[in-house]
Length: 391
Image (cartoon, rainbow, N blue to C red):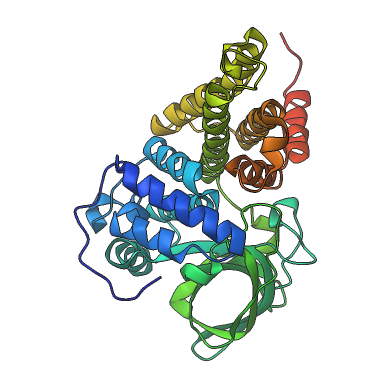
């Protein structure tokens, strides 16, 4: 993003009701998808609107938004450009987690939050590795933190670092080189010597998300940037609250995609009138029933999201097994809604001249975010089978 920062307006408490902003994001999104180029312009528009600091605490000048408003903002952006929405989802979840954290040094926490407010500084984690895969499945990361006179030196290889080209801060998961390794995060600032981006992201969907590989070679990290180091056997990853933010915000990205697909096919059906028909396709009962099936998927996803968000806002945090099941359900509803839209549009859906083709590609990515459907079902099943006999 540009470093010529203009003064921001007062930060919004919700996503701005600005159709021109959504239209611009959609225009940039289509272009960036075609070129697989990073959405710098879209992120700059969101920065200027104050959106990138929506979940930063109000005490630091941020929007202070909770999960309900954050998810709605992600959904709105997801309708226009889901690649940008995924970067935004990561920013919202990480900044909200930062505000709750008791393990981050206070000065560092405040600095990262304030820079999101004043400069739109983006933050995301780097956890996945070529051999390890996602750390949620267990195992020691191969990325190693070595002690130095001034702190740590980090060496390793991370994959799928969403938004990499636009990040100011990267929270790198690593193990120490001590005799009894510890695991934790090390906050790395973009531009630090030893960082290298390997442009490996060449995906079916979300082509503009810039989820490239990150290589680290003896990257210097100050002592104060080591966060939450614990013995390897004690590391548990994200807490239950973060899991709910992840489920709802990732779900919101693809809810936006599904809504965009629904909107396009509804307009198509309203105006498409084959030469042998006196009325458009929308007048047919079979078509109306098929659109109703799409609506049912969107309604179910919206109701599930609202219920979980209300629990989180009230401090009722569900167990990870329940949150994972919700994430899988939301992904399934979004995928089904787009598939039904594609079936209704026929050949038009597969034509790259129409946005429905892009929506179908983008929604496929809902399957791969952790926890995957298989992992979520395994966790929910184990929880049910180990809870004791049903009275």
